[in-house]
Length: 309
Image (cartoon, rainbow, N blue to C red):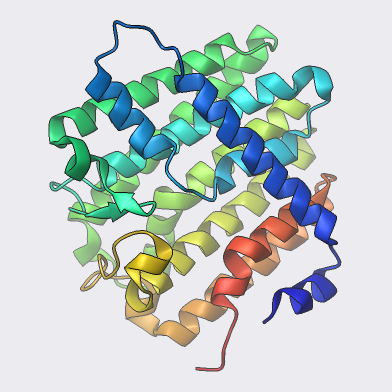
């Protein structure tokens, strides 16, 4: 499916994609600002490792979704960008830990050597801890009512803790042998990827002051989008070139995934079904959906569109 066909099918215009990409650029600039001038007390090696992982080339899908859902006015833009930086720091920290030799033992991430390869395991672990703690500090300092800040911290903490990303990583490392069907794999995909997508989208909705019904639709949208992203990642792991996608491939060989259990064709269809369900919920939520749909098509749909194989 060519980009022009996607635009014609889903109705967004070039300016919608441009707006989403401008948002990504604003997030990138804010991330650099967050790590600049941190003070002479920080060891140079540590701040270099943080920058190596955080400022590396990335789609920034999670923080951009947060921003597009929050859709702040001029007075709130800085606070929302700070919130975007917080979730990107959490995501980056999770990648640093995921790549460690005791976990996935990856050599490449975001088009460059993984943080432990470039700086050593101890500094990589410390940089992940530093990014995590910095993220929560940022949320505590944003300009928002205390009740809103508390909700934001609670949502983020739950998504990355023992009932979220950490649980998903433990199952991925030590529980894959017990996964026997699509339900099991989708549960793992929810913990590994979906739950953090939901928390990022929900944080944008909370900042915006959405109703409980709108929040429910946003959660549904982000859940399906996260599951689609994980299935697409599993497809790329088995078929793509590491130099093109910027990270190691074949890390899931021998593991239970939708691809390994049911084949590439079924995985592509599952992914596209999740994308369609995400679109329907998004369009019903009341947010400005076209820039988000343009972002999805750029980074997801066009990469896994069914090719008949």
